[in-house]
Length: 371
Ligand code: TXA
Ligand code: MG
Image (cartoon, rainbow, N blue to C red; front, side, top):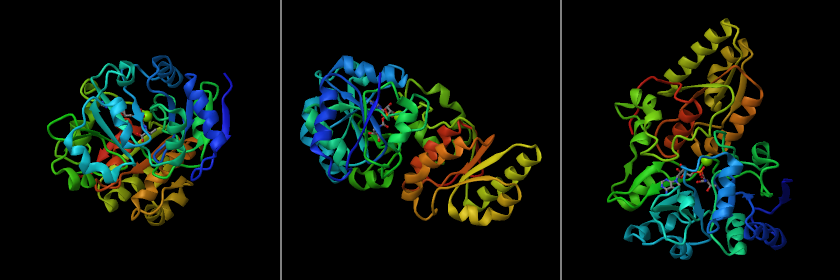
């Protein structure tokens, strides 16, 4: 299969481009498109054959459910069996980086939800994504547009690096804004529960819904007292947390993550840089500009490969840069990549979640920061 790329204006998508892409969706094909979080790999959510194509192209296990993307909340009734009253409290977060798990309408093929009675839905805040859904006149099922196990794509080039020759079309609308995936919130439980931290924070959800739980696998990473051991148990929670174990943030080279207060984390990194270099290991660091400034003497003494994520005072900037910087650093082929977390407040929780998974559990916990 030849993969076509079409440039599209991210703010004001050209009607001709949307019409061409919609035709591919309508005939059961696969179209990668930008959203405000990461690029998605879309197919007609109501066509089981098209949906099967997503799993094949990504090499994704059929047990991992997909998010159904809608143009607006009015389309919910197409795919959701019953709307919970709490939904009205979330209206100002929609469209946006928030995915809601709700009861699945029988119209939605079971394969979309990997056999579950629920369906995950999201209204993206991106003119290309919304324009494509409207032009195709159908909800669009879309996981992140990467091969299973790889880092999520934030540019069309990232999509092609993983999926060239495996999908019909990529709409290139430039880099995505948020840079990490949506928050997945389960609204089918008595108390709403975060299944995946993301672009909408726990505090934002608590402000609107009152009590919000964080699923055990995510809570362990939020700095609870059992955090030191809980992350090593990850392989055992697959059944309880479908798809949450997808190591789709993993670089090719070894990533070591340190979680803790900035000064202690920097000291840990400095010690690692020195020790690894003395063993003859080439080291790369994925750090904020403040870290890089403070560690400059040791980083230059050992000719360390450096990727800057932006200032630690701007976690949105760090999220925006994370995946592209990780891909760039990985391509420079250091034997070991060192990174640190950015706390558990706001986007920090989602950043930590992605970094822990990219590290494959290779995490040094220096302390247990507050949730
Ligand atoms: O920002 C995003 O969410 C991006 C863009 C393209 O919208 N999409 C994305 O999709 O990250 P994906 O497939 O890479 O991740 C979807 C997550 C998975 O962790 C999956 O297990 C969870 O959502 N999920 C989907 N349907 C679910 C359901 N019915 N119940 C529980 N979790 C579900
Ligand atoms: Mg993914």
